[in-house]
Image 1 (cartoon, rainbow, N blue to C red):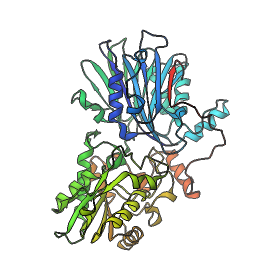
Image 2: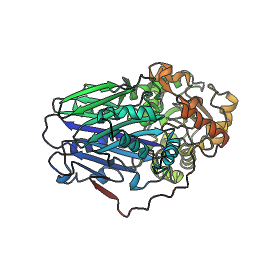
Image 3: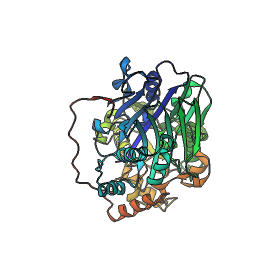
Image 4: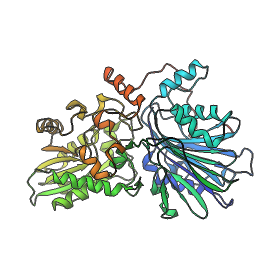
Length: 506
């Protein structure tokens, strides 16, 4: 039940006006992080209940295309966009989650709780039944338990004591207080900005760019709290940081316009392409052309082509409204076919350097190579991957659930950094291309920036930064077909509507 999502929180500092438009606009900017569902919770001191949640299946523009009803407006709120890698796509799993634990509250979460199943069992032993397919439900329970006796502002301490995994989250309560927390590993990004009129928190800076340039990173292990009664924003240290930033944010998930932990996503991708150019061995001539698999690989392709002095062409184009196939879990093969338009003239008679951001299952690139060959006659196809080989599962929120689905795992072990030419040759023949090269894992630091110890490359190295991650990986090697536990708890009945409005307790 891994999730990769986007979160946002916002509040008016002057105590006036409605904030819902800003939340919806921010969610639209985070749409690339989740396309399955969208939701918001708003706060207004002028109504009963003070918190109201609306959420529905689909894109932000589908769920909130006409805004929200006036009775759902508020001066503060949180929002969420979601995709799930397993567990289902029902409305009951959409966020924010609203609940009552003595006070009204709601939360929205991005990440994955690696010790989720252990916590489900522990709570079951204590007589508390939690949906075994929704890890957000565990977070809600931890917060609920804390709020029966503790203060809202101290909720992150309860989370830090209990959870193992990746979580950047935002919360709001019935007093209009806003709370954000980023786990002490900093797996998932979280940033904020404060203007004269409002406070905004979001998964990525691209959602905040409209509101000024003073965007700050919420450091790992820190919480942000705002109370309308005090009128001040507080940053509190909850745990000492042990940074393990997810490098895959820079490779694929984050928007290229975002800044994560003071590093530009777009510039990092250009750097990845430039580094690939430094290890190129194919003879460069006038027949060479670089073509990216849009759109996450565009900047890497730009850097690669410029460094080698070769032409770039838009040989592949995404069809309008095409969704991200890494996010889509069902019928990936057919969806890839429908996702791209191919310009045969860009490939005809060329030595093509096909640049992709990553190679996980190989679904996308297999279909593309097959289709490119069907409609054109390229002289050669050389696949260049702006990411190291993905050879191990992820337990921190990326859709890489088990070894059996990983292309590179069939040819190498996670401990291998520079793959032998013989192995690369086997890979190329499997894909039906002339050659393949990956970004070396040692180059990730140079291209992304920061310290080696600050990055999580568990899906590359098989080295996990948390105890539950280590345990899950060891279990996955015993049973490689599944890295998730199977529960017998029945699912909740399907809902008949696509839009849910929660008044009071969701």
